[in-house]
Structure formats: structure tokens, C-alpha cells
Length: 133
Image 1: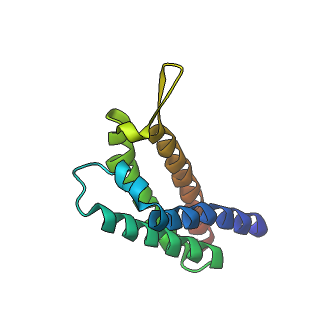
Image 2: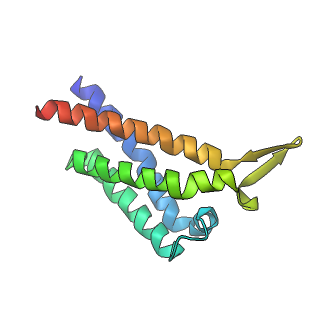
């Protein structure tokens, strides 16, 4: 069971590291996703990218897993409520694909991705809290 938990923890960490790197490499795309009411967009993108990279590495090396899962879960909740839901309600033109008359809003898929990652983090938090009992 511990081997499966370790594999799951590492697999969960990989998207956070890659997405964190993307926050530095592709910041223009992320700026387009941010709501206009969020201040200092570029700094917020870099800070959240750094948090994701550091947290992902901590999950892989199995250090302070519970703490960093809480940090990532909080970050995803912020993303869901301050970025994805507002963008689903009023999507920026850059985040819309028109295919055969059907508008597909990429915000919805980002919302689902972050919701799934949040679920994985909550599972790991539950496993680690049970182990500490």
C-alpha cells in the first residue's frame, strides 16, 4: 500500500511542477486568464508558479507532504473561485474556441483539471492524517 501511495504522490506532483514551470515560460497566456480585478498579475503568476514547483518537489521527495498538500489545495481553491468560475461566467475571447457553431470555453476544462487535482490532494491529506493517528 505504501508503494502505491508513493507512486500516486509522485504522479500528483508532476502536473504541479510542469504547470509551475509554465507559469514562468508562458506568463502571457496566464495573464489573459486572470480577472481584471486581480492586482499585479505578473507577480501573482510567478508566485503561484513558484509555489507549485516547490510543493511538487516536496511531494516527490516526501518532505512536509501534509503541509504542501494544504498549500496546493488552498491555491487551487483560489484558482477555482477567482479565475475559473469568473472566466466561465464571462469568458475572455482568447479562451473561447468556436467549433461548428459551438463555443467551447477553455475555462471549463481548466476548472475540471483543478477540481480533479484538488480531489487528489484531499485524498493524500486524508491518507497522511490517518497515518499520523
